[in-house]
Image 1 (cartoon, rainbow, N blue to C red):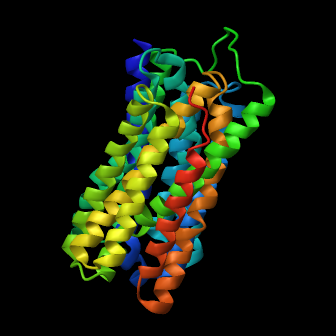
Image 2 (spheres, rainbow, N blue to C red):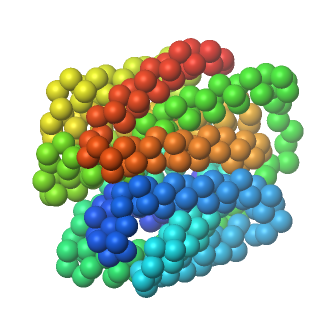
Length: 380
């Protein structure tokens, strides 16, 4: 019963936190409310990913000392308080503290907590299980984007953020209950064989590099999908619908990335996904328009999604269960750096040119570079 409980716990916690990827729906109402520009809002998203990564790095040193259920509750309290502060914010600095700091820390620690629990509990098809867990963020955004679009229109941005705070705490409380009832552990006493230290560092560097390159392009899409579609001529309704479609595609791609690593060599899966993303950037560069933007952004996002699922599966494959949280927390530093690179640059370029064309070309170049780096992954 531990494996199903671990998967349900991961679902309950990660779905509401995954609305981070629907941040683009908040852009225009928050810019109007706080009187800030696109680059400043991009900074908040980037800061949230930094604090989220900090939570990931710290989590492995905490979950062996404190009961997992207590950590889940603490994550919910931290992030919910941040969202309540964001809902009441009257200045940009208050919003930065609430959403960019408190919300991110709780999300990151909770993410590693439940993923470690899944890796300790699921014995068969671990690639598929890891792909499912990492898919919950874009799936949460896929569900959240249309809900946010409706609640913002009906009740306003403040009520929407406060409602999200309630959902986050409720999800973490359910996770805490499941972790305690199922007695899910974070460490397995059996000794596991790992790679030699020199090979560990080589594989870690390759995996971190590909993850960074794919995530930089993918996070640009995830954080600004609605704004990009609107910049290419799409109406507001089309932009919100595109955000839902794109986040759903990324979620499916994450599941596929984990599933594919159970069946094919990791280098082939990684290279194919990044070639697919390159094609998306080329489509939008050659035929700019709202429909091409939706298609291209979905392709770039799916390329990132496959790498995200593949990365989680590769950690379990190359390092083993007990080391999963430790390696994943460090590896997600590459994801954090990616979040403060191209997404912020894209916002800065848009503020000055009112166009995303250059940012799309940069994304395609990063995906192409990832193809060559991924070819050096160990096949086993």
